[in-house]
Length: 237
Image (cartoon, rainbow, N blue to C red; front, side, top):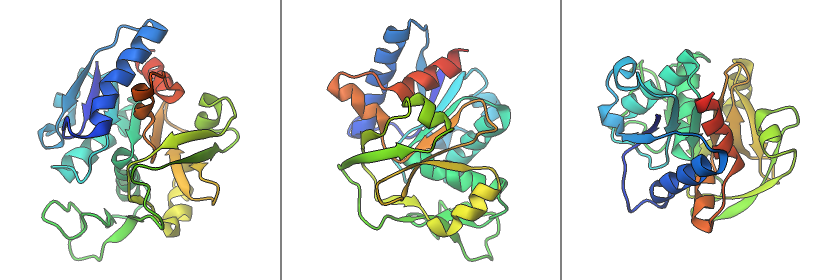
């Protein structure tokens, strides 16, 4: 079973696309794999709520109902070696979780929600370290080319070729924190033609990939996406 962590809303294009993408992938590779939605405010103790999951996909749709829940689910996948995919907001929050719990940026936060009641910074006296900030140019309902770093998992998944992918986001990784995050082990491996971060991964993890783009949208065009296929294969292994 795959856990789809996010606050399901049929009005969100990505939420309509994800079951289609998983169904296409399951049929294409012949893997028996089901999935279930889990709201961020229902994550609670991940050791209990995610106990039966073979993989975790933190889906688009932020700000989430529970920042704590989203970050707890991501941490569970990272620490337990559970195959993880985060798209759009899922990637942004994976960066925040890593920043807080691995890179020592305990006040790491998201510019969209910093200072709100849902804000879960550990040190409330500290100014937020905004590791996710507004993009220089909004990517809402836009598409663009992404190149992947040689030697990375994404480079292999996309068979060394650039990809053109669709987005629906206005926030991304703050480049001011890139060196600190990479020094702690997070590798950014997908970039637009201007060199802005569009994807990342944890090389030390069996499968931990985040993308600012939404590969699930390929299903709306009747296509099976290589990244989703790689994720499902990792979960089934």
